Length: 273
Image 1: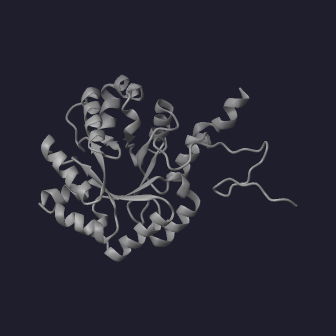
Image 2: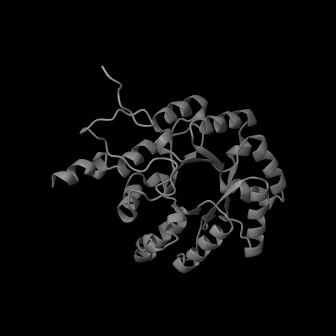
């Protein structure tokens, strides 16, 4: 018996029998950013549960956001173990934006940088869910974080928006963030929900924007799978999504590939039409 052909991930290769696939890591689009809230009804993570999940799904998960202020609130040795596990499996962990907003409000961004270095987190979300930064202050904070060796992602939007977002303004923000070397732009769930309710045509026009490839949409974890599937339908299987829970991440990858009853096993049924 000769050598058995496998791909770089160890999958057997056959002439005719094929599973549906999509682009592999590292990806620029089609990103899945999982949210790690700790052991909960969203999925049992923690050191042991996380390893089980990543054994199955590491190649489907690009980033893992450490929820809210958990990177500060949980015991540092535990946080370091979780961070190390993600890195060992090729998943990039990052701290959530509420942690930045907390540190900024307390005039403690320098201490936040020190803390992230101590728990080995090299990436941080800068958000303005509750605080509001002037343009020059936003730029100064991003430069401060980057000069400390941190990769920065920016979350656009408020937790409680008062009017639908302007596509032109969003585009200008995305382009300015790219000019600053920000990794990706996350669009806050509340902003998406308001735009979908009040101006759905504008939401569906997003993929036509040249800068949209840099955006990561934030669906509501409590609206799974309906909202996630709708985003795949509206924006394509390679839409980048954030705040996907551990319990949802494997199912979402199946939906992207046309696997599952909610998408009518489209990888097969579409070919039979």
